[in-house]
Each structure stands twice: as C-alpha cells, then as structure tokens.
Amino acid sequence: MYHNIIGAAVAMASGLVIAFVNYLFSKKVLVKAPEKYSLITVARQILQVGFLALVYLVGTKTQLADPMYLLVGAVLGMTVPVFFFTKKLLLINDSLLSGENEKEVDTDG
Picture 1 (tube, one colour):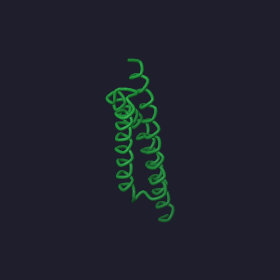
Picture 2 (tube, rainbow, N blue to C red; picture 1 turned 180 degrees about the vertical axis):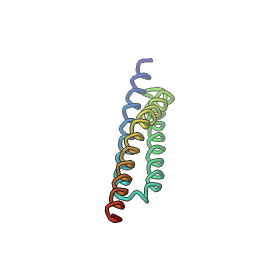
Picture 3 (cartoon, rainbow, N blue to C red; picture 1 turned 90 degrees about the vertical axis):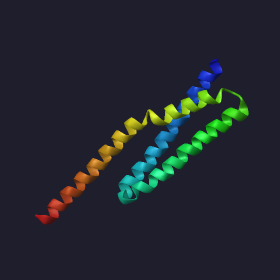
Picture 4 (cartoon, one colour; picture 1 turned 30 degrees about the vertical axis):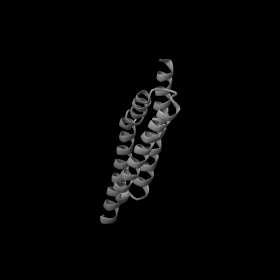
C-alpha cells in the first residue's frame, strides 16, 4: 500500500514540473508574441497528454505501483498548480496591456 502512495507522490511532483514547464512556455509566448498564444495551448496539451501516457506506460510495465494511483497523482500535480500559474499569467497580461495603453496615450498627446 505504501508503494502506491509513494508512487502517487512522485507522479504528483512530476506533474508539478510539467505544469511549471507549461507555465514557462506560456509566459515566454505571452511576452514575446501574444498573438501566437493560441498555438501554445496545443503544444501544452500535447505535453500533458504525452506525460500522462508515459505515466501510464511506466505504471503498467514496471508494476512498481498501481497505475491508477500514478495517474491520479500525475493529474493532481498538473491541475492544482494551474490556478496559481494562471493568476500569474493574467497579471503579466494585464501589465503588458497597461504598458501598451500608456504608449498609445503618450503618442497621442
């Protein structure tokens, strides 16, 4: 039983890393080319689904832990931090938009 909980904790930590990598990709695109932000969502989904497939394959092939525990841990690790990362992305977006508005006012006046 303990190996299932440890496996879920490791999968959750790995999911947190995937969520952080997705955040870094999104932040980079949002700052450099915001008009291409919709394309990064496709890449993020591919990374997430690939990670879940990898977790499932590792769980079924190695028999270290029940694959269901691993998948639940991985999903929680990817989804729980999204609330925090989304708020940070919204703050970045707001600051970028306010910077553009200030530039427009300066050129008009």
